[in-house]
Image 1 (spheres, helix red, strand yellow):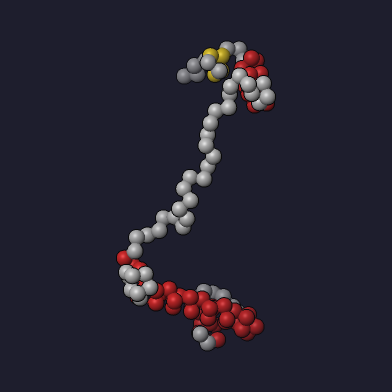
Image 2 (cartoon, one colour):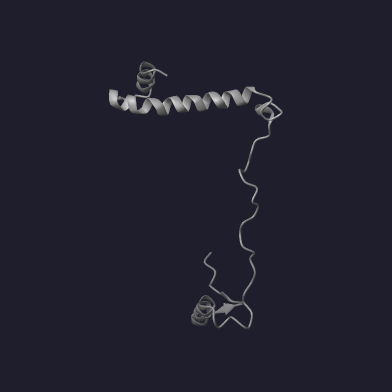
Length: 111
């Protein structure tokens, strides 16, 4: 890419590049164009992947790590309920409610 092409492209994008900015940006734009040319060559070269790239199935995930979440297990047994501050807070709130049933606060119908 020559500086005139860069200025024309910048003009199409409504960018007003000074000569210094154009000189600084020119190597980056040339590198991008080389990358685009390499991607196009990979699309057209069947030997790169054994099949044309356009015939490959789309990738839905870059890594096949699977489920990386922790196993969700209950911890409410008789040994640790007193040491869990959230459990104690829930009990305190239930005790302060006018009516509760099966660890739920009972409220009157509103409709």
